[in-house]
Image (cartoon, rainbow, N blue to C red; front, side, top):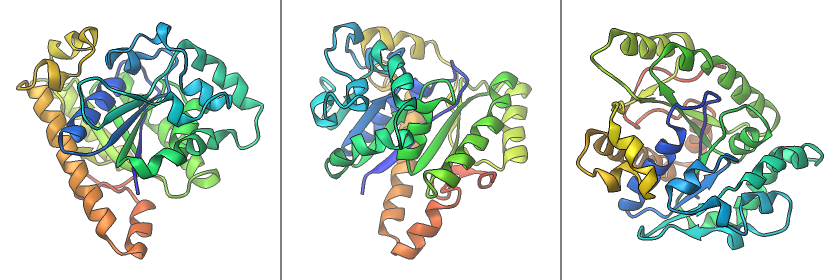
Length: 286
């Protein structure tokens, strides 16, 4: 079965899109068939992959309004074997209003993805910086959540709200949803503040912090304008190596999970799911 992972944090600017793009490329490097899903109307992931959102005739919005199937919207990422995307356009902003009028609206993405899952190994969903219906769709479709966390106080404040939303999704729409852990982004190990933020997340919320942290680098800002990720733009940089290590750890954990007996898999899905993925710290809150 494909592993569906939502990358979520309602605070903007915490490297959600960078994390989806970089992990997707790193997993494709490892021979995995990876589908990226851009759920953000700003379409930053779509742009970073080398597509012009204004020039696309179809997007994931068309799946939500039932004008197209996901297979018809899906696009292969040029130059990267095994990597594809369900792109976004500004039309996706209208999906929020459309979905609010529909019964079972939180399951729209899961239904759209279902026919594609036999053909991929991993789906990474780039959720928008909000806790609205699009993010709820991403969480409902997923088996796990990754939380990119900028190591600053304002980014830390929203984690509790996100975990409350995840708890609601577990209760009403997707009981198997697990939190894989926190990915520390824009990390500066020279500052005590960054280290304190990570320690506070572990202590207050019981979240695992996945290793290694992703350090600050100007290379991350340069890559999207070239339609590339950090692993293509600066393959030997510390940021590229961090995402490769995170992808390797996640890949190993998912492989072990897939090989486990069914009863074991069911139990893991209800917990933190953080074991074996380069994590330190505990499970999830709630």
